[in-house]
Length: 222
Image (cartoon, rainbow, N blue to C red; front, top):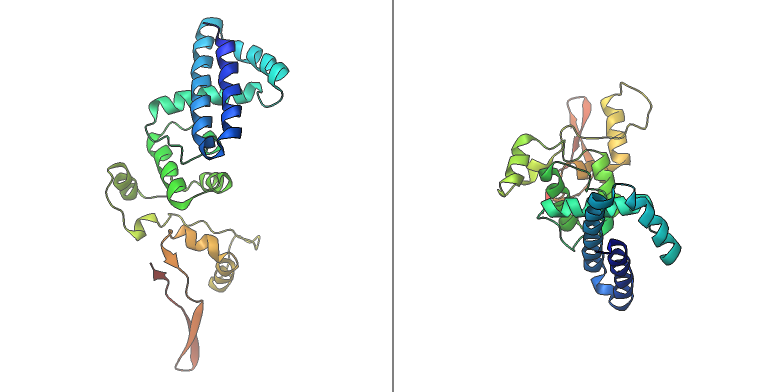
């Protein structure tokens, strides 16, 4: 088999398909890069690891930029990833999967694929969740529910520990300062508590004896 010709044809056909049928771009990308990755994997077994670098040079010369050695290795890894992961769907883009293909934990992969679909996450948002180790901060009971397809409850997705960005540059802060930090970045704080909350208000003041106490108002679960 002429692996290079097959790879080149796959990439050219994909570019044509995306221009003619923009609505099927995700599916076309995923199918193409899976096929290219498979061919690269097979070519590597026949000719050695260096064949990817050779193909990269030839593709760049004939088709232009965008086919670097690194990008071809990502395609090969995507093939290996998709071969063992039944969760691959064209509801996500190839760029989404490039954030996940190096993970070995299938349950972790499935979690991020699931929340990307449910929350319509951009690649940037997915990258941020991975950086913040969102999956690792779920408790073991929640992870078991996800693995066994048991219906979770809202409180299952409260992260532990809750990540709050400290903007004071101090190691020890008071409760009042912590409250201010939370309110300054309230959107991210609520996301740490899950995704089924609608924020109502901040707090209200109650006088008890000779002093005022501040109580946070509730979040409405929808």
